[in-house]
Image 1 (cartoon, one colour):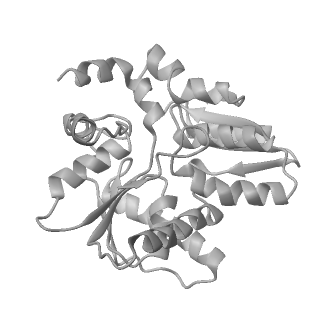
Image 2 (cartoon, helix red, strand yellow):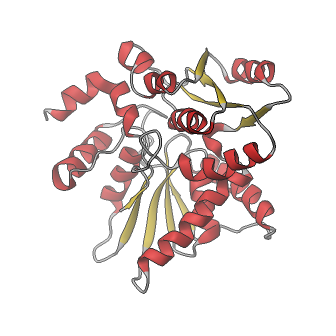
Image 3 (spheres, rainbow, N blue to C red):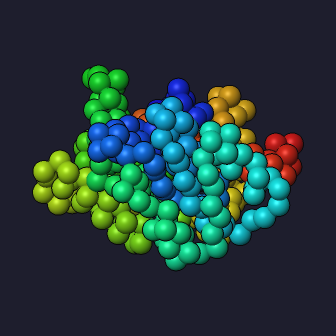
Length: 283
């Protein structure tokens, strides 16, 4: 297991690797304010807020109610509470169109706007570097595949550009064809920054088998995966990203293979699902 859920800023998560590049470029360009997007319980938003606090940048989070959930736990706890604890200004929107208009209104000459998930061409470089880090850690040990979450695309795109190991990318927000289209676009942005040809991504397989009713709606299999990892390894997954990815791994594991499970973090969002968590933890 590759533990990107463990980090020194903002309770950790994969977005930190992207932010190292995107916020580095923002600082080099003289930015004073960062605007970025996400769903209400966005992990990218939390880590952007924490990183901005560390760097002395203002942070404006434009969040969209994109998951069919309500109640105090989802709307005020988890990442939302942490966003405000880190000093970010949180703006809530009902649609993507409203979010885009608000972000445009917030921007000025001192602003850098980051895309959803930090999945820009620069953000992809964080996981090209991560692929090199994994290769160094593995040494001569061979692995059959990497299993990783596919959301906004930057994490898998960077791994795909940086490693020739087969990758199972578990989509948490789109059916496989649409998810692959997003991945190809983001990988293309990363390749452009690196001066590479358009990538083929032939070693990447998109798996949408745990998508269920859609983004942010965990299935019974996802909760079962959370319990399994907790009760056998003492490791906590989240019900949106790593839980779905683990459920796909469990269902599709092949006898005798060696797999790297890339834990992309997101654990604070678990508290946004507190009523479900309390019930599922007792099973």
